[in-house]
Length: 506
Ligand code: ZN
Image 1 (cartoon, helix red, strand yellow):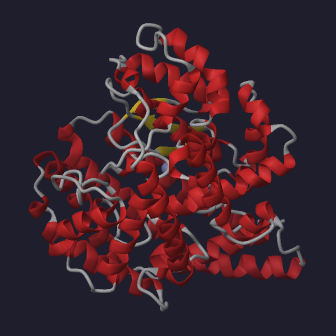
Image 2 (cartoon, rainbow, N blue to C red):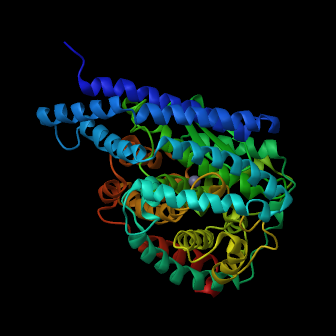
């Protein structure tokens, strides 16, 4: 019997997924192992692999196979959520989106981003924003061009947001961000006005190797599988996957702050477990990924914050920490350590922000992205606009551009637009998912205080991870929470938690 069009499509796209995996491996190496001299050749090699994957994916033969496979599946009368139907829905969407990009554009775009990334690493080291302004102007032009290629929308950011958070638009996100800003800015100001607890003991010194080893042990307990993953240090931590059986995480730490390696590693383990938890049957298909940036981030935030900064968790883990660092933590109680994990201090670095003020950093970036795309802000004014917006929203501004506009890799490695909303959506969703898990798991807090993480990890795998991209984000959210995205559970959680830690701020 002749192979079906669906099977031929699946075989063809398995190659595309593997080409992308190979490009990811080069990216991982670039960020962890590669000597600086490798940069120029690596940029070429990455551009080539991405171009090959793109060409293979948008080939006319793939379009014909898609048409034929859709007709087959229609004729077979499979249900709406049969594997084949999910595969074709997601693949058709990706195909139309990628096919809308002319090859010439893709080549210019990737070449420009590789150059910009390298320039950013140098500009950041030299605190020289002027060096990347012309590159960033070109990035903005390319981002607007990208948005146009992707198709008509109410807002230039919509197609860019839709690529990472399908189903979300400026029209739905702006009110959500306004509501968060209105509630969080005053709460953060009240907490920031309180005396912070004594956390001098977090400054160590704590040898980095010991910190990384401790953090790795903890995330293995969470359920991150090191037979199918590994942990390495980098400058800007991330998780990355080459298959469901090789999902790597990275971290960073400070000798003079114990918290950074812990929170970074917990965070990335949440991303890693998401990918390791995807149904193995989805391997080498376009469905083998998280369903959206926001849902991905909800998983990392859950392990970083809901677990990793909770009193219940440290009831369990603090004895282990004391054994690892007996001198540095001599005489420090678990309560004092828990308060130190949740210190709120105005800061200028997003990735080092405390849980309460984290979203203020995202709000700044989200608003600036929209201003740039709407033409209300010129790139040359961006460094100063960054500082102004920080004073207004976060309550503090950096003294230089290194910790200002040059702080994040995003605008220097990808388009402007759609890069940041996922972080805050992740926090909002983490709270909604936590409430759902609490309804379904009899003693979630008790489990965590006992170091029994299997119930939570298993719940996440069952309700979220295994689906990969089979469920679209809004469908998954409705399925798990019973409703739409709602910031209220998150705002309630923050008000309760920080009202408890800082009673004067209530
Ligand atoms: Zn993350």
